[in-house]
Length: 190
Image (cartoon, rainbow, N blue to C red; front, side, top):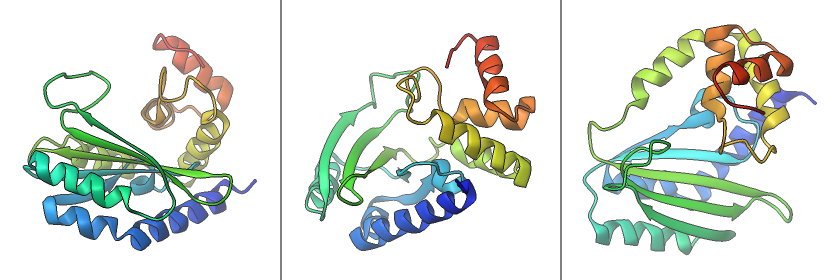
């Protein structure tokens, strides 16, 4: 499988979904909108879009956005969560909307939308540094490892894409066996 082509196809499909729903335009009414995650880095191996909205959003606006998303074509489910007070180390503080939408008859998109206060994002510097480290060999290694593990039940629960990025970009990992060794070194397992 050509993982670069798969990544490009997922980017196109994801951008098409965002465009059809006019989601970025709608979200921009409530703050500064940034697509983050693997879509922003060009490292997609599955249908997943992460969006961050920096703005001081009211509860009414939050539920209005949820209503807007709920009314979109091919929506499968939507979940809402408030992480503003109960800080979970695996999440940032903010309001959260998780969406599943049908891409076709068998595949779904996962969209995560975070609403955070202005200045609360820690991602700008992270993405700048990550992009500086990327080259074709590292991109291919990341895509290979992500593609190999993204269906594993432990993915996103025990380890995440960030672990893969750190392993490849900071530790020189190039294959799945080395990634398993890296995870063991940091107290996680595949």
